Length: 391
Image 1 (cartoon, rainbow, N blue to C red):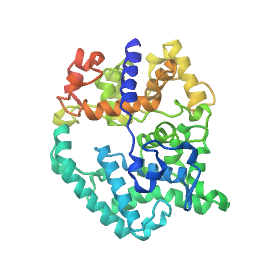
Image 2 (tube, one colour; image 1 turned 30 degrees about the horizontal axis):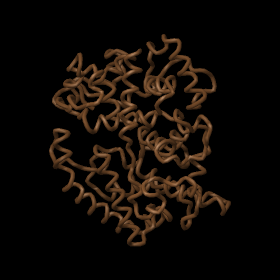
Image 3 (cartoon, rainbow, N blue to C red; image 1 turned 180 degrees about the vertical axis):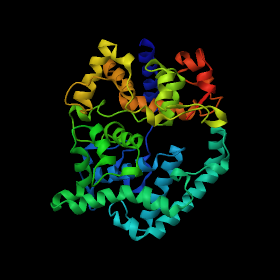
């Protein structure tokens, strides 16, 4: 138990020192929102054309969250930034008027293709070296699709259709400029909002977005850019789950954290661990399958169980009654809440930084320079946790 607490603190401290954020100040239409790189909260409800500044930023971040599900987050953010700047220079104001993206789809596809090709030349070799891969495999289009039209319509078009539909459904003309921000803030917590972003029967993105990305969106809105006007616990530092992606899963498994809360046999039974299915016949860690899985060990800890119940009922707001079981993906958040020193956003930033700068997805990551190496069980005790597993 103390090991898990110490590890989570260490990773969150890395995140505090190395925050991860899209460079919104480099998007030309947002540059005057920042002073010089700090977003001015007092001006977020000021109108910018047909929308408020808050709504425009939320539209951009929703699109970014959908796209940011590939192997190179920095490359994805560069792609979105450059394409956005190019489209606006040609008066395709797709954030202010999402219908412009569909009306000028040919221009959008051309810019996406051109920028992607340029980024591939700039980043592929370095990416391949870090990941022990082939530069030719570098592809920012999700699902490794080669069809730019499919990528543009499905991955760009779907999140842009959300504010488009919300504005058209809003009968009050005075509320149209903030249609998305009002929709986002209508839910009891950021966690519930993150689910509705995917699951809502009318406005949900469905297969266009994963739960990791919806939680990333919640983090950006609540923690990174503080776009939410809500001040209740459901919209506070512990009001959303930590995004569980391959970086998070790899770091938490290799360091020994996940094995503190369930056994390898459990993870194999749940199809989280797939022997022989990873690169070079290693065990593949399917991180998404951890969601919803129960930790009996966490339930045996009285203080942690009580904190977990407080987390679910008062912060995440996902339970009307105290839960009877503990879900593993929420254990890090319960540990953070119990300490009250670090936030969910800082922990995620730490997992991202370690996963992309040190804990590479191959047998020889940069362990000697990793900031959590003194307490990493894969480095200190059992090297097989690093050599035999991939995400």
